[in-house]
Length: 432
Ligand code: CMP
Ligand code: MG
Image 1 (cartoon, rainbow, N blue to C red):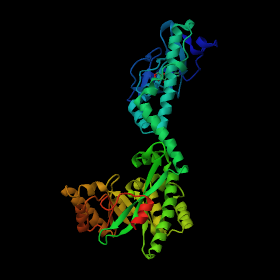
Image 2: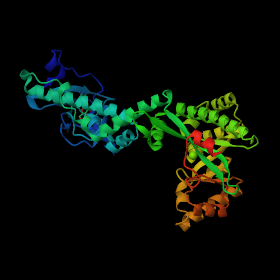
Image 3: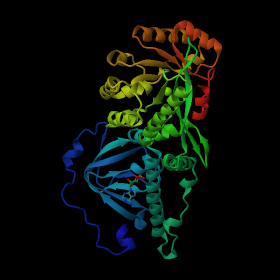
Image 4: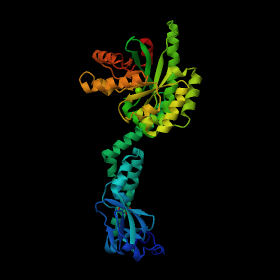
């Protein structure tokens, strides 16, 4: 066998590090479910084999090689602490090289499932980097394999080999999401983000009591980007933290303009609030409360004018969430539980943490007229809230019938297309 060095540039023959060889005693160990023992000279797998697990070497050495017989080229010798066989399971491809135990070898087995789930859960950019690194490694191994057979022919460099992965749908999806992320990064600086406002209506008095601010992105190249698409991306990448502060700044600026307008109309006493959605990531940001205080003071906005809408997911880290909610409420901010009844639904935290209102998720409201069960659930939520002294807000009201049922059930405030869709600030002012 040629070693990689000797086949490319002459270098001293590969010498195995001394010591650390698996003792024969190790071979007596019961392999158990996650330990494998290999005998000296045993082939662990061959290039082209299907990959189902990776190994961490606990003791002993293995040789990694491509090609076979006289033409085999040794790529590396791996020892205690090294991992091999990870490439095939990371991107579900055949083994890129063969692996043989040099002496007795004891390895810990890592199952594909242990790795794949973690990779799938990571961000697209991390997955892309991994895919590229693996592709390069594979291309190089393929190149060496061919080189070992026909060194005299002058092969194309691995750089010229086909990058088939760049044509895959998965790669395109990842690339699109990276482009979206970098466009979103520029969106704040380029003033492409806007706040739209959806009125919240007192179901009994039928007047507008406040507005929920909703983020919109008008991109010069993409047009209107769906909030579902970019807000989840902003949350994944933590871009939501600076964007969240921009939203708070803008909401405060607009609040003062709403106030000004009311004063012009001779309605200075009318209280109007703006709700701002606060994402879990923002809420957990150290210093969130202090920054919120500084920002509202700078704008001259009273805490009672701003409602913070948080979802049940903030309670995933319950201790921290309760501490921050208490801090905000003590300062006079109103905290509303958004999308209530979906997501991380546990009533525990309602006992442990005081909040100011409940927003019943629109999925319940949509079925209000067609599903008796939805009606029972909504009625029960309103009843729980009432007994806890919390007003309820129903999201997504589309018909007069839904409004009538909600009113009869005792819901105080409504929001939805029946009253208005989210509208630009100028239209919201006009609506007043
Ligand atoms: P996999 O492709 O699953 O199977 C062969 C393994 O050999 C591969 O994962 C890596 O763990 C390892 N391998 C491949 N190429 C090299 C290399 N150039 N140097 C060291 N290890 C390698
Ligand atoms: Mg909301």
